[in-house]
Length: 201
Image (cartoon, rainbow, N blue to C red):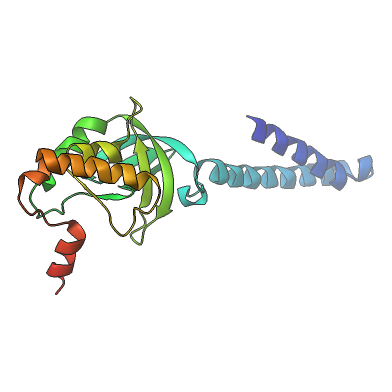
């Protein structure tokens, strides 16, 4: 591994400095060599942490590919990135809350689309619950956020979806509503943000 090779070079340089170009005794050189070995182990541990354990929120605005581990609900999934398990909230949309109608149907639809598959995340932000907020692209190239809107299992979030793509997403929502599919089978489905506001009164 390239990092190990670099560390070994550093270790040799350290030893060569400590040996004072051969002027120290053999006993002292052995002592310095042991110390250099300890430093090498410490540096290797640091590199391992940097490479494999770097918190994913240190990655800003990147596209990353992950493996879906679990479907939490219609708009939240758990994924595996390197050695970390991360909760991902779908950006720009909202599916019914747990006790709302069509909550289970939305979760079932998300499960059918991405369960145990690899997906690509376009990270937008992190929310107050420590979840990554992202646009999720499926293995077939389709967008999970959009598919939930097309199938009538989500709303475009009026508070968070403010980008140009949201105009297209609103059209998907309008089309699903006109077709009365998914949650739009109900005459007046209640958006989750309204449901939460009423519940907290």
